[in-house]
Length: 309
Image (tube, rainbow, N blue to C red):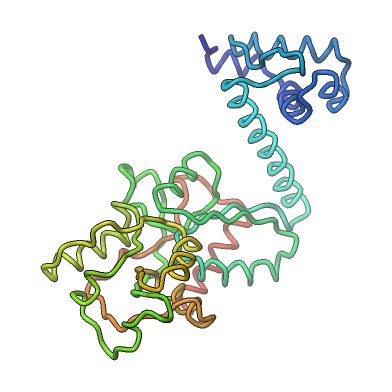
């Protein structure tokens, strides 16, 4: 039986979590004890206390040393996250004390990456000591990271959430979309295209229920066409670009600004198809009622300027 959360909070100590990480890295209680600067009997006692706190064995004792079991690997993973969070906490507090620098964690859907990059570039000119973590993912996953406190700010959409009122959002603008293909795709030579001419192509599409996927589904439905069968689904920009490079017959839907950037480097071609539907606007989003850190406020100011320029 795994211990309750209050029991874990009251019994676990940070040095014990450091020991878990050292045991994973060293595989030996003796070497792990040296790494965290305690005696081997002290390490043995600490490990017993850790397993007692959780109410279960975390390591298997073998002739080669200690080997984490499934529960142990889970505990080690979270010990590393807690250690990283403390490091980030220290960075942010130093930034507050020094009046500059600090740490910022921000997420973005694919189409907002160019806007984010421009905004961060200007912010880092004013705050060169700022440490920044950028996460590119779907709106649903970014909102989950906001819920967990892993992101200060995200540029995405709240409509994918079952509780959009849990967030504060500020509209940044539209995300125009474009159909793209390998530069050698035969359709790139045409002056104009209809969706019917693309229906039989091999498509790379966004996962189900995501805004870009919904736009494409709506386009096919309004044109009276069957949605492409057997597509490749991915939310990764890099994967989409690699798939387009690998197969000259594939096509994909992509935010226009991302597509134009890739086209300038010859990585893809923009097909001459005018979409009727517009995607849902993107917004800067944070947890409802949660104040932004100083770096996040500065980034939001830059996002506003970039969106309005």
